Image (tube, helix red, strand yellow):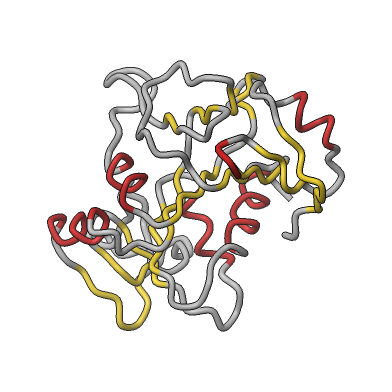
Length: 216
């Protein structure tokens, strides 16, 4: 199983019936493919759509149905569209149960950096500042390292997205939470040891008394 699938499947287990959930671009969009059967989850795209389904099969996409990154999405029966003012009213008004975002870095206290100076790694922050500040729960979906360098760091060297800490990080190696404001290893992926996670992490990790194996 590839890294992105491991991450998306594990995050899908965090969803509950009736939730309003925003999926950021990249790995987060894959989460909609792995919603457990019978669970009603309402996915919101910040460009103005509630009721997005799994990415359409090749050749079946509609040119007017895209996610915030311009990638094709499907719309479930009962889906609704609206303008960006309504979309960000939902986000800023605290109506999102969960947002799932990618990240460039997360520091030891859970602070997120997922944008850079325009013209560099990505064009800008998009709606991330609003999402991190407005959602009830923030989950980061990212690979544990990039080009061999840790992405969970002691202190972010990139601009912070928000002063608010994230609630959970899910990578292909581990699930990390922030109880008491400290990065804490909660789960390891199948076949991955605590030592391997620590070796791939720059930030000092506390280890839960009961580190379980990720269910995916």
